[in-house]
Amino acid sequence: MNLLIFGPQGCGKGTQADKLSEKHNLVHVETGYIFRKIGEKDTPLGKKIKEINEKKEMIPDDIMVDILKSELEKIPAEKGLIIDSAPRLTSQIEIIEKMLANLGRSVDKAISITLPREESIDRISKRYICPACNKQFVLGENIQSKNDPCPECGGPIRQRLDDTPDGITKRLNTFQEVTVPVIEHYRQREMLIEVDGRKRVDEVFEDINSKL
Ligand SMILES: [Zn+2]
Image 1: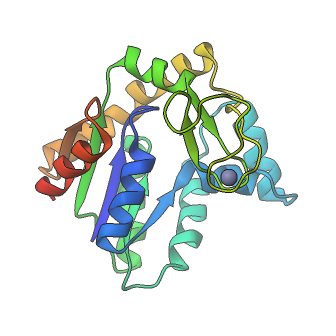
Image 2: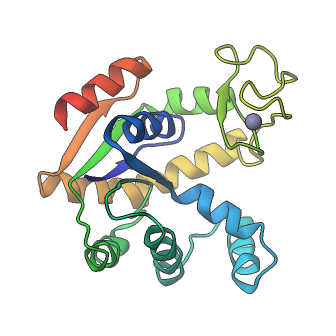
């Protein structure tokens, strides 16, 4: 089974993707994380990605697909995929599906987790990450203070640099402009599973599974 998962910042798609991976033997392909990691490398591609990330621009389709392809090639054929936030814009739908087809895969369902804008901003402003293990934590839920160590590995936690009100608004606008049309595309093809991200984590998970 190969799934796509979409949703605005703070909707909990990372958590749901992890839970789905475990239940259905999938590999969670987190495109944002892959690009950030490559951007930290001292290679020509790393430098280019870093520059694009710093300017908060979109990674060009051809580079994006090349990177994604080299990641997906490493995944054994018996494992399914859950791809987080790709295709990110409508121009990528066809090239990504073609690339998947070349790897003997096709998209089965696209999951969209919805969340109202105010809720998204509220959640992200409470979000902390551990740069070492890439886990996310929520102030008042799994951490009580921003000075707490990472509950997973004990390392220092921090907010993402672009998790400012301005940064969040800009990302939500981009999501609305470029990614919502991708979600609508999958709705038209009757491949969309839409769930309400305001519910509790276990309820959202149940909703997704009941529709899969
Ligand atoms: Zn950690």
